[in-house]
Amino acid sequence: MPENFIVTAVHSGLRLDHFLVRQYPDTSRAFLGRLIRCQAVLVNTHAVKAGYRLHEKDIVEVTFPEKEPSVLVAQPVDFGVIYEDDEILVVDKPAGLVVHPGDGNRQGTLVNGLLYRYPVLPGNQSERPGIVHRLDKDTSGLLLVAKTETALRNLSESFKNRLISKTYHAILLRYPGRDSGRLVAPVGRHPVNRKKMAILHERGRYAATNWQVQQRWPGFCFVEIGLETGRTHQIRVHMASLGSPVAGDRLYGGRAGATVELSIDRQLLHASTVRFQHPVTDKEMRFTAPLPDDMQRVVSCINERDP
Image 1 (cartoon, rainbow, N blue to C red):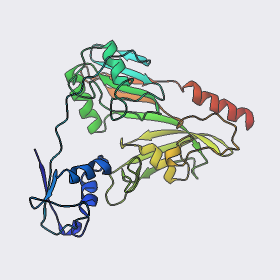
Image 2 (image 1 turned 45 degrees about the horizontal axis):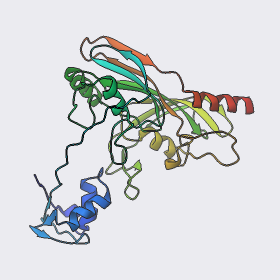
Image 3 (image 1 turned 180 degrees about the horizontal axis):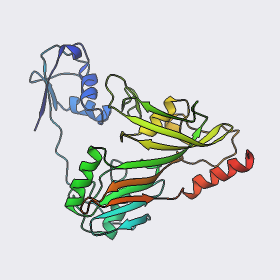
C-alpha cells in the first residue's frame, strides 16, 4: 500500500529526495533515490525528479516494493547463555557478532545461532525471531531473548515503557570533565552520514545517559554508564559529545593515536548488567556478564603503564 504525505509550509521548497530522507530516516538515500527514478514516488500523481522543489499542499505518494520472504538459515554460532528457562534467554553476546540478519549480513548472526539451538522462536516469520532489543555489532554483553509469544510481547512492552534497567561499562578516550553526570540530549539520524547518529535538538528523540568514572589514567578513563533510554548509538554519541568517545570507536572519534601502544580492535563498550521483571512470573531478575577478555587486557596494560 502506498503512503501519502501532504507537504506543509515547513517543508515547502525542499527537494523531493531531501523530504523523503526526513520522512524515512532509517532508509538509505540511495534506496530512496532508486524509488524516485523507478517512479515509485509521485507528486500530485505525477512522476518527478529527485530535485523537484516541493510546494505547500503537494501530495507525495510513496510505494515501497514488497519484500520477498527470506529464509533464515539455522547455523552454529558461538555465544554464551547466562540464564535460560521456558520463557526467556539471557545471552552474553561476544563483540563482532551481528544480532540479526540485514543487508550484507544474511548469515552468521546471533539469530542464525539462536535458530540452530532453538528451532521454534516467536516471530519466526520475521527477520528477528525472539529479539526484543539489540546491541551494536562491536558492543559485547547481555541481551534478552524471548522464547514464547507471551515473553516477546511483555518484554517488548517493558522496553517501551523503560522498565528494564541496563548498565554498561566502557573505556573512554580522555576524561569527560567530571567524575559523574547526567546528559540529556536528543539523538537522531545524522543529516549527512547515514551510518551515524547525532545530537539533533529539533528532530532527535529524547535520550538520557548517566555516567560515573570508576578509574582514571592519562588519556583514558573507565566508566560505568546507566541508560534511561535506549536510542541507537546513544552511549557512543553522548560520550563523544563530551569530548570523551568510547575508545576504539572510529565512527565517533574514538580511535586511539599511533603513540598509544594498546591493541584496541573495536569500541570498548560492554553491556554488563540487566535488571527486569520476568515477563511471565513477575519475579525480579538481575544478571551480570563479566568484562570480556579484550577490555580486561586493555585495563591491565594501562594499569601497568600508568599505575
